[in-house]
Image 1 (spheres, rainbow, N blue to C red):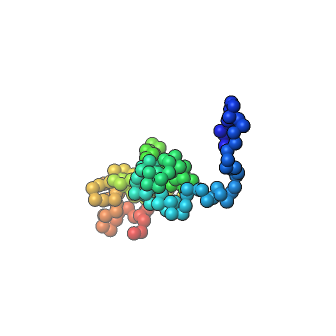
Image 2 (cartoon, rainbow, N blue to C red; image 1 turned 45 degrees about the vertical axis):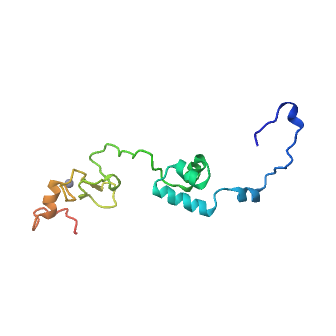
Image 3 (cartoon, protein in one colour; image 1 turned 135 degrees about the vertical axis):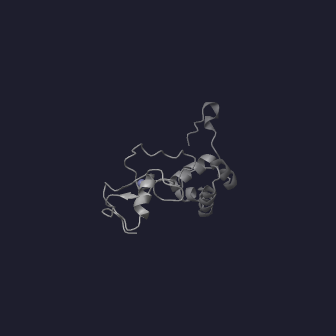
Length: 146
Ligand SMILES: [Zn+2]
């Protein structure tokens, strides 16, 4: 395509006429359904793009490009740190070891989770464990029915 021939060999013509042929382009597309399936499973397994390329007989760049087009998640990207909004912990940001006591009305923008470090083997922090496991609860004003 961009190979400009310069100098005396300018008159040389390739014996094979290469035309842009959509049907041919599809046939030469390395991404057969089998390869795509293989890419997806190898990607899931966690192989590097280079290893996947070697297995499929294609370049690493082709693997990267196809994975991008397929919307496969980036694995090697560092995990995005949630913004430091300590007072507003949402479900997406709620990790293991964090109090998942719901606060507010589910579905509203104010709804959040406590997010304090939870007690070992408990889903809640000390304060909310008290509220969750207290018998005959003294504070039932905002208790979520289990
Ligand atoms: Zn809590």
